[in-house]
Length: 349
Ligand code: PMV
Image 1: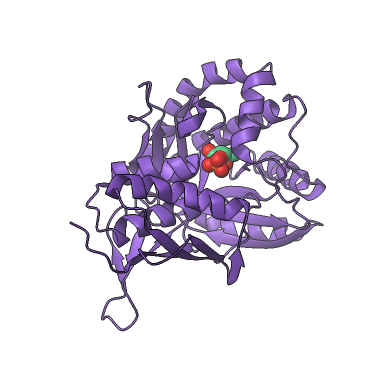
Image 2: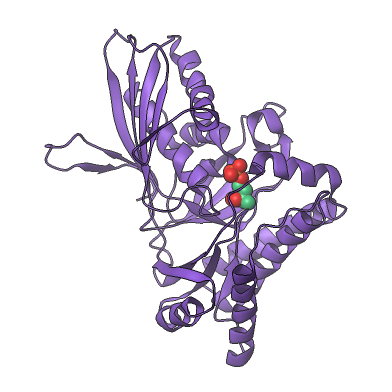
């Protein structure tokens, strides 16, 4: 039984980058996808969010990267917290303070780490004893890809079949320790356009208008199976071409959407070309590009190739910064300052 008071918790989550993309919703109201997707949670990038429910607060408040936020993002957070209020049957509002250590809304999946951290903090604050599957299900309601950031390493989000989406949640596939030499070179490009259409709306536009959406759906089951097997064997030579094939297929759907969705800048396209030419020069796939609904590009490779590749990609015009990232952890809860071990890691390491 919850007595009135201040219920707070802090949770940290890392973004994930999709190897098989989620693009299209079978049940838009609940962010339930058409297809299962596969991702890698990244180390070194994180959203840290503190949620404090307080019966005396007149409304929810949101502070993002040190600035109070009103309007759209705060309404998204409020709508998401409504799910928790319904669950505990209390109308309590909350103070939410969130900070990213990477650019917000620019293809770096801040919505994934954002809603995973928010879900974890709200769960912790209210003392709800959920397992990771249920937390993933809740995170999904904030932003589909957040369902995957609950876990570390390679993560599978099962699309599910039920009419109400209750069997749509992520499960860990292989933890971050499975392939420690795996690297993601995050290439941040200049003048990344701010996302003008929210991805949830954009993807439904693709479902409705792209003539290749259905063909892509028919290819995905087999592509996902082959990727899982390549990851299992730590076989970069098989995995990298599949990652690029998948990225190209996602981009084709975006470009054939009416009106077209073009997320890339000239610098992003130069990175894709450079990766193709590096693989050609090497005579084998040593790297793979991918991107989400934004202009930044992620280039996967293995540890021995990463420093030279990052230098080469970083020298391209319009590339502002490259960061070499490793497979990262799932959500973790942070104890208040002053306690002996401030980080409590529960799942997915
Ligand atoms: O979770 P959302 O609504 O931000 O959608 C994410 C969509 C992509 O990032 C493009 C693909 C994915 O699977 O992460």
